[in-house]
Length: 283
Ligand SMILES: [Zn+2]
Ligand SMILES: [Zn+2]
Image 1 (cartoon, rainbow, N blue to C red):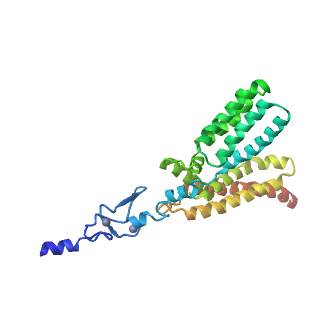
Image 2: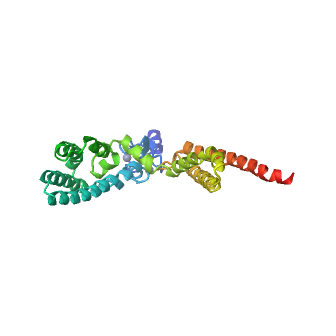
């Protein structure tokens, strides 16, 4: 009797009343049994919570980009259109070899734009083929193909591009991309603005030597003001416990501090100049 009462008082799984709960969901607090416990990025949830888009935010982020054309796909598409034009010019000029090279590249470009996986390898082959085939016939220097090759290698390795081709991406890389794009980007912008505005005290005395420095000085000061506002907003948003978490506290804080330092320096310089100008007039 007492054994029954004590086991009845023990928490039971919200989904399986027969099973004893081992823990509680970190989002809704409901009891979950061992079988129901679902781990998402280091936290325990009940199955309904684990399926929520804001809890599994990396998965939501991945699904949002899955199969969606990215900037590099559009870049390849644009270059393909140019190559198609070049192919026409080459065939009209009677240069069959160049026309064939262009036609092959156009094929790869179209396939890439359409998301055919083999075209990722093809994209690497295009600059190499161009280098080998046109170097002797047209006398084009091989160096000319070096930059397209580097671009192709970068696109091949790019996480975002792999998501367009519906290829699996390790969670670490997905997190890096998410961090770059979604995690409080305002803090990042504020920091670059404040770093840019730091040049103000460096350039201000130099610019004033050349006369027309005041407009530029104003631009730098406005940048610092904007960095201060954006940095403050970004700092207020920071909430590492939210799902998805909002981070970049140090970048936001750095932006605010740098902007304040810049404005203080600017104010001091401006004040000194005012004293120089009007202090002399009063005497
Ligand atoms: Zn839950
Ligand atoms: Zn259960």
